[in-house]
Length: 427
Image (cartoon, rainbow, N blue to C red; front, side):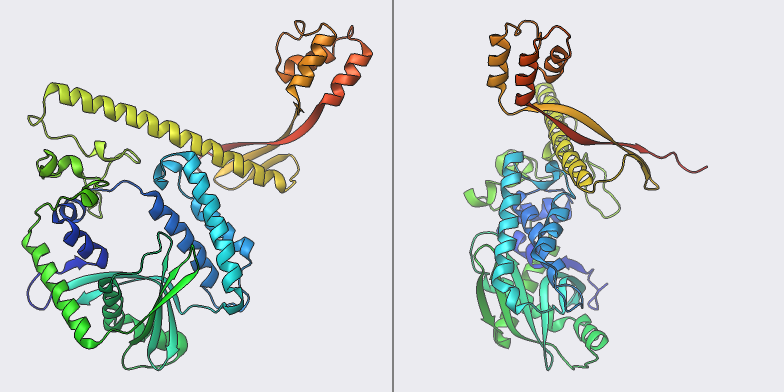
């Protein structure tokens, strides 16, 4: 409860920006707690931010190598299946992954001679200002002495400069933040009466361009904050009229429920989790929120929505299976590189059995077929799988010269096999 008797309102730049873009979308997202679909560009940006946090966080004078930074990126990337990354296809995800690795390598090359540890990285602050419970996340904060700080904001999308309001929000939150002076005293042993922004740096990672912005004047910040408080009052008053436009509506996840497009303007009935967010089947998308209540839809609509749900769910599961298979292949390859001896390895939760499997490969299927035809053995091979050809080679009546020529076209490969079983719970 705020001092003025009003309930604290959750507030952030992104919430304010969404409300000003479309109050109805704000209602669906933050009042009704409806989830948005994963977005590939958000996931990509988070992966880059995670790698840069790994690079700058800590106190060691020795910085991670570029390979370690890229490994941190890949660790984040593999932490979610494709269905939760927000990319349209596996090919798009692979392309963005490779783009991210190349981007980090170039960032490292450009900045390696000026690396220095950040004071704070990826720090979330949450505190009250004027009846608002403000949440802000800072990509990086550097302390410059005399109570002055430099705030860096990393951008991974298009090279568009930050809007003035976003910069003003950074400044307002930083200079009103009661935690920053405490952190400076705790970590640096320096007591400062107040925090002041020296500059704000917008760093565009894809191009390594830097845009510096000086501290805004107090009059500018006051006007900005008065406007922000006015927006907060509209949020409290529940003025959630839709604000349709091509740019606002094109990618909106809540379009089906908006009155502009025939919806009721109400969120569908659903359970919420302890955080107040709508619960639902993971990775299913808005259709799993989007069934209108009984009586508001026809039988044909119900059948159609049900079919769409089932088909989308099948597609999501198939996509997730493909991602899991790819990740398992990568992990098994990493295990093979360790050159472990065959046997069982117990992790506590799982028991892994490592073994070796031999297989035959060829670089020229056409040459194999040509050799079989030359010796009139094509039909006898029965199948052009490697098992059929190897079985033919083991026949006692096969000409010796054929056997020797075929062996030159084949090669044996050893592959590490990994079988994992979950250990039973302790008695």
